[in-house]
Length: 199
Image 1: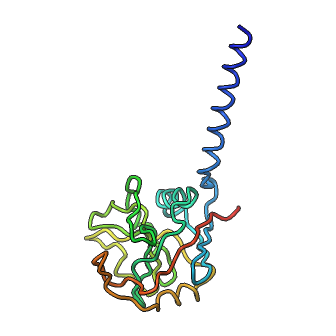
Image 2 (image 1 turned 90 degrees about the vertical axis):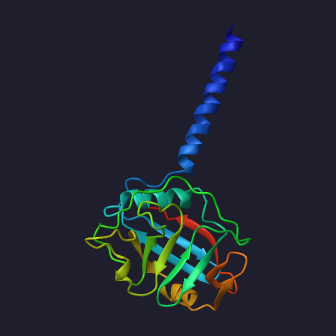
Image 3 (image 1 turned 180 degrees about the vertical axis):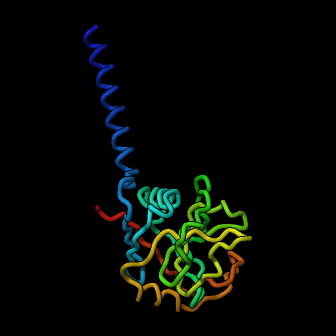
């Protein structure tokens, strides 16, 4: 009887340890209002500061992908000088990555699609953003909401590495036959790793 009880206790302990590790693996710093994320790209380092006070759902969604390593070894697949640098959704083999549920549009939060900000990409459905994001490399206020339409949710800004972002925005691009998409870099720009920085 004692042997069986000890076995049950051991199993429960293993389950609890596994759960604690799983929770630690998705720690998105819920109490940090302005978390920072470092992007280690093939062209240099970019650091963004996110704004959880203005876009809480978007920041939580984005950080969940970051902490789970979902952005590691992805590419910036859409680059348009003086407009946007977009990534987060494709592998170097040009495979589209799976995503979780879409996040509610928070574009009416007072943050604007200005130079050096980070925002969520989406389809025509205003509430369709999942994992893809973009950096504004121009003053893109036309992407902000208006009285008659939803905008694109801005949720942070670049605080380090703006020169790296600008360099990425100027790489040569082409119409990619595999994707049948325009504005794809001729030579891939890789997001090697995205890391949530310590508080």
